[in-house]
Amino acid sequence: MRRTLVCLALACLASPAAAQRTDTRLEVGATGTLRIDSQRGTIRIRGGAGRELHVLATHDARTRVDVRRAESGARIEVEQRSGAGVDFEIVVPRGWAVNVDGLQTSVTIEDTEGDVDVENVGGSIVVRGVRTARLETVHGSVQVSDVRGSVHAESVNQAIRISNVVGDVTAESVNGAVLLTGINAGAVDASSVNGRIEFTGSIADRGSYTFDTHQGDVIVNVPAATNADVSVATHNGSIEADFPVQVRGDVTRRGELRFQIGRGGAVLRAESFNGAIRIRRADSRTR
Amino acid sequence: MTDRWTDRLSAYLDDELGAEERAQLDAHLTECVPCRTTLAELSRVVERARALPAATEPTADLWPRILEHIETADVVPIGPARERSTKRFTFTLPQAIAAGLALLLAGGLTARFALGPGASDQPVALVEESPNVAPTGVTFARYQPPVELERRLVELESALNAARGRLDSETIAVIEKNLAIVEAAVEEAIQALNRDPANDYLRAHLDRTLRVKVDVLERATTLAGAET
Image (cartoon, rainbow over the protein chains, first blue to last red):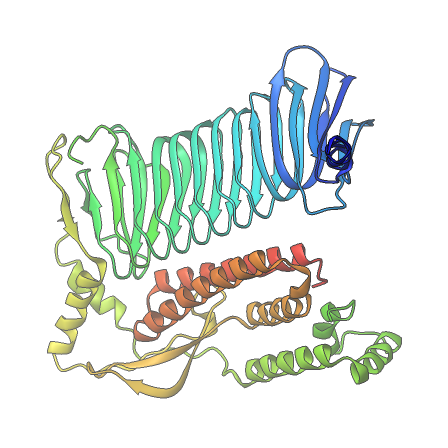
């Protein structure tokens, strides 16, 4: 009986499914780019003080994780010989850029304060506290916050949530909502086909703001002091405005109404084929 | 199978290949069924494009008269007049346009109109085809997408069909679901545009939605590693 138990224990240890850890620490420069390519699993990256890159990977015995210095920083490659994923916990020096190429990989990046580029197929993408973000996924959701530069986010099948950004924003979904809050940008372009679009943020006098969907409402919450030339269009929906709106014989594009908020200036376009367009004062308490 | 010839088929049709490359592609076509299928589809697109009439001027343009009725007042207030008021005023755009149309139709005017390819800077063609008379007596035009866009869609759909086996079943299901969503939106916009051919918003919206379809197909074919 005792021999059987020992054999089972040894078999478990040798099993490909048994979890292994690859723990790597590299002294690196103050700036650089971490490139990571992992097809399955999770990746959590956070920024840290100092000049150490710390990679802790949990994986099965048939998977090999290779962490090495590269000309531009560091590179992590995964040789996955089984269907099992790899779970990464990574600390990069703050200010480093991060470039992730995933497949069925959930990615979380926090407080790295550098540029972030993530391409994924499945799995969610969560990014917070970075300089710029470029995020693309097919059927994962995208959530971005606290960015001090531009954000570009795409998800074919899920919602995109972007908040607290000082920088230009482009966000595109096919089957998900695009929800933007706390946006301070000179240019915003948000679109969906089958989702609603909601924007809350400031409008720069010479900025450009475009919101477009086919099936869903477009809700634009802007400050009372906004100066914008607004064009709105819908086919089967309605148009509501909290602002005192006057149309001055300016129905210049067929199927579209144009009007001015404040002194005009910014270009604000909101369109929905089947949904309502709501231009709201952000301080409105009516809804 | 998709192969390196897939994206040369358009040039082949347009007679832009050199003699050697053309001969190679001719030889390839004798043994590659997917390429022959794609070539046939592209040929149909090109034939249809050739059959398009030159820019057709509308025989009557309703819009100026509609606008005239809408603009009877110099300033039309449609929102709350008081600066701090939070009361909302709701209206629908089709209602406004329908009102203008009703004014015209009440006067016994029956109009016939169509837009040609040159009528807008948006690359969208509207051609008259088998007149479809609405209850109002207005004759509608039938929408056709821009030829280059349609050609690109055929190429991408062909490439995706050939390479779909390289994508996992979940991703293919998601792609197909989203393509169906886009196609439903496109169809809805086409029907609306056929009923209201002078509507610039509908044309621009349709154009954008078709480009979303191109984007989704490009994403899918890139994931599948297909050559397009």
